Amino acid sequence: MPSHAPATAVRGTEFHDLPRAVRHWASLRGASPALTFVDYGTDRRGVATTLSYAELDRRASAVAAALAVHCRPGDRVALTAPQGLDYVVGFLGCLYARTVAVPLYAPEFFRSNDRLEAVLRDAEPSCVLTTLAGAQEVTTLTRATCGHATTVLCLDDPPAADGAAADTGPAAPGDIAYLQYTSGSTRTPRGVLIGNDNLAAAARQSAEQSGLTEQDVIVSWLPYFHDMGLITGIAMPLLAGARAVHLAPMAFVQQPHRWLRLISDYGGTWTAAPNFALDLCVRRITGDHMATLRLDTLHTLCNGSEQVRSDSVLAFAEKFAACGFALSGHAPGYGLAEATLGVTSALDGATIRTFDRAELADGRVRRCPPGAPQAWQLVGCGTPLPGVQVRIADQGAEQPADRVGEIWVSGPNVSPGYWRRPEETQRSFGAALLDRDGRPTAPVWLRTGDLGFLHEGELFVTGRIKDVVVIDGRNHYPSDIEVTVRSALDGMPVATTAAFPLIDEKGERLVVAVELRRAPGAVAPVTREEAVRSVRRAVGGRHGVEPYEVVFLRPGAMPRTSSGKVRRHACAERHRLGTLDYLETEWWTS
Image (cartoon, rainbow, N blue to C red; front, side):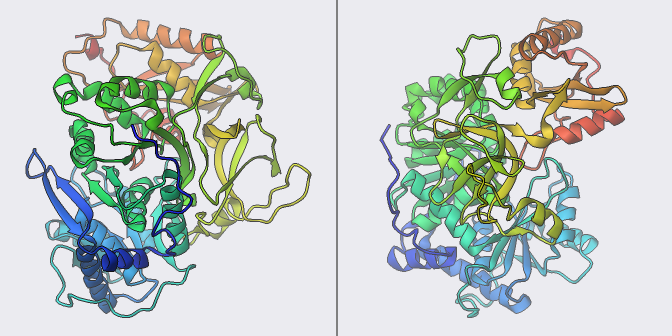
């Protein structure tokens, strides 16, 4: 695997907004491929369509010209198109027209529209961009949801005003480029304000950390409405003048080998995925597909968006070593929408360390042997991206290394706040931090709501503040407990787990929910009672707290965000109300 140390300056990343970068590459290397989308919806073998930089610029300009007829700079424009080239063109067209893009997903019959409706009501778009296939459904949804007239334009029905966009002038750095709606893992979706300067900074930071050049090929299946897919799949390669190769998220989930196949076919050098994608590849990619994969061109696999697990990292590296992938290619990272995605990323592969969980529960960091009774194996999330500062805080005061606290972030990528939520903006953004000498710093800090610590210069994340289970005065981290539960149920078809508190007049007690998946041919020769005993014995022995309840859920019953994260708070509330889809039978033994 080639070494790819970060470059001091990546060509093209000096631009302070994405439109100027795309137009630069269109004038300099117009015939070079910018984006390739491989569609598996019409042909299972995949049909590839490519836009050059010149074609991308021309089509985005045409969309901007159409938007200028219906919108003014600063108006919101919702994107409700399927994953594909049209979506990318529409997003760029919004930026060209200096409107505020609202990246969303297209309505689908198997997905609830509740979140989509909530975002449309909150954003109040003047225009909605979609495709001909979904125009009728989008129009109906928009009319029923928005309390004002909203124009619906089809991206695959080119407007008559094909050509240069209306001259709205260059975007100012502080102008809002788009609203990134959070996935709502702990509350209703909120629109994070992302300025043109935030967007360019985030793309530049990721490109520089990985040392990207025009020769790089970024392969991505991540959804565009999610910050990780938008920044790493679209903004980062376009800013650096590189090539991006995309497929739809559902195409990956249906056949995980397609992702790695495209890396092989196109000589992919950079890719990203949340942790569950590694597990899916290890579990479902068979020997026949393995024999055709070549991953030795891949210098970076960024792992983020959810807790990075050491067993997933090691299993992926072990399985695909024969295909040319090395453990040094893993780049675990940490980020959040409020920071326009990136905060930290690993430079030289995954760092795996073992810590004493009892000490972590008390806020202290102490290494211990992997086989120790209280051992908790964590994957480091790397060092801050260029221009980003990270501090660990407790009650507004900076903590030294090897102390657990809230992760605070500052940098040019940090959002100015939330759309129409001044109180929440005040709580989360622009906080003042007392440094270790007791001196106040400038009020530029974002309070992330995540817990973690700095060890040997690297960030380790332990969980969300609001997810921590406190029993008898001790902190217990759900992500740690959930790993123990999966290990205790090894051999059962476990899809995901959630650990959360049950709070009533008796105090706070631990509940564990286990969602099972249908695995053809897989037989778990255990009864429900045996499975519950295994979980209680493992969690009690390792964490010093025995679950009050262990419940099993049907496939797909676990509450999740739009990006697939488990919604622990929603799971706890539904369990309290008794509305979870519990599994009453033991079908997994038959």
